[in-house]
Image 1 (cartoon, one colour):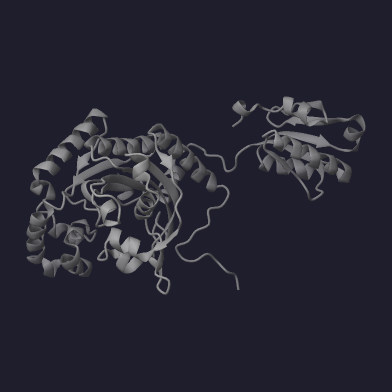
Image 2: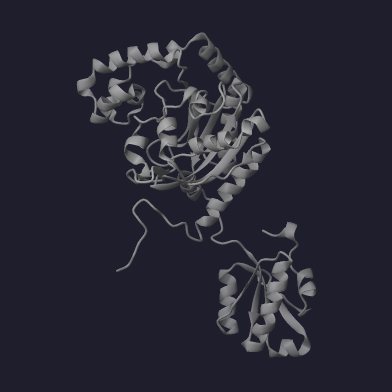
Length: 421
C-alpha cells in the first residue's frame, strides 16, 4: 500500500521551493530595512499558553489545535503567543525597551483544508514590542504594503479599531442586544458565539448572517477619547506614508487578545476575497502572559501558501531550478575520478557544481547539464587527462576552450560571484 501525505499537509518540492526561497529572501530584505531581528521558536508549547493568549472561547482553542492531551502540550497554531513567551522568558524587555522581531515557520490547525490554507501552513510573523506610539502601527502596515508591492501582489488594506477594555464593554452590551433581536436568523456558530464571543458574529462569512449584521453598531462610534485619538493618529500616519486604506467596521479578527488597531491585507486574485496578511495591536497580552505591566505590542502575520499561489499567477517566469555554475562531465572511470576532486575544490571556492556519478555517456551527461541549467560544462576524458587540459564549454554560446585541470585555472573562466544569477 502506497503511503501518502496526510490530508492538509503538503510537500514543497523542487520547482516550487524556489518560489518559497524567493519570498523569504524579499521578506528578510525588507524586514532588515525596518530594523527587525529574527527569532526562531519551537513548534511545541504548553497548551495553557494558547488558551490564555488566544482565548478559550475561540474556534482555534475549542476546535482546531493539535494538542497532546496527556502531556498538555500543543503544536503552535500561531506565532505571536510563542514569540511573547520567549520575549518574557529571556527578559528581552530589559535588554532593549522596544524590540522589533520576526519569525518564519510552520503553524498547525485542524481545520478544513482549502485553497491556500492547509493544516500545516507557514507564516511570516513580525512584532513590535514595547511601543504604543500610533506611528508604529502605521509603519508596520506600511512595511507590509511595501513587501507585497515589491512582490508584485495586488492587495487592499482594511483597517479598524477594536477599542480597549475601557470602551469595549458598553459597545459589547449594545452589540449583544442587536444580535439577540436577530438570533433566530443567524447560523449555529453565530448563535454559540453570541454568548461567548459576540464580536466574532460581525466577522461571520455566511451570507445571511452578513446581511443581518449590516446595520450592527460600529465599534468606531463607541471609542473612548484615548482610543479615538490613537486611531486618528494611525490614519494620519498612513496618509503621511502614502499608504492607501479603507475602514472596515466589521473587521474584528479571530483572536481575543487584539485591541485598538486591527488590519488585514485583502486580495481578490484567489477567487473569493481572501486575507493574505492580518494583525493588530495587543497592548494587554504581555502582562496576561506574566510579563511586565504596561507593555504594549503590535504585529501581523502573512500566510505564505497564499503568497506563493499569487506569485505563481504572475508571468515573471521564475526558474524551475537555479543555474549551476559548472557541470563536470567525467568520461570513464579515470575522467570521473579526476572530476570528483576538481568538483570538490571548486565548491570550496563557492561555485555551484554538479556532476554525474552513474557512468553515463557524454551525451547523457550533456542532457543532465541542460536540465541543471549549467552555464558551463567541463569535459574530462582520457585525452584530456593525458594533455592535462580539459574542454570547457559555454552552454549559452556553445563555444569551447581548453583549460588546465587545476581548480584555480578553471575558476578564472567561471562567472564571478557578483556576476552569477
